Length: 109
Length: 114
Image (cartoon, rainbow over all chains, first blue to last red; front, side, top):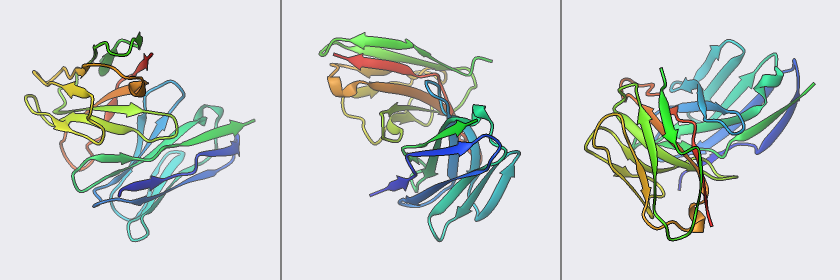
């Protein structure tokens, strides 16, 4: 079967750096997405990786290793507004997105 | 630009009743999707449509039906609701153009079936 694993919850301090990991086992791979979802709101797109390596976008970076079935989202200079759930999703051989359950990130002052 | 709108925002429904969740996008995207989101689980695809006039089944299609009469609208119908269909339902769209093909989500409909 297809599986996306992420930690359920993480806690970090304002101003610090946090890394959210995602491992996947899917039938085929056509890209990996990270979305942010604030409580009670819709998911919004953060980043996309299809080749191995690091993609940097401001305070957020995303890394992919296809051989290891592994990705992480790195958030720097954490702000209180970064408190949200972070969803990892893999596009499979049918071009459908398979979603992880999400990681709830709690930021403390 | 409104993006994607969904209606209603929330609904309480008696088991056995039917209901249609509405979804409209104004981005002229080819593809549209219906997901359900339950606590502790990832978003699960119910049905999708890659273009007007065509639909396909996702991971959890049983108990749901969809139609895609035009590009903008993609309603989801529950013919006879059951309590296990209590969930938050998200509609999404993408333009299926290029490798990125980002999905954009509506605000969601919170449905409770009693």
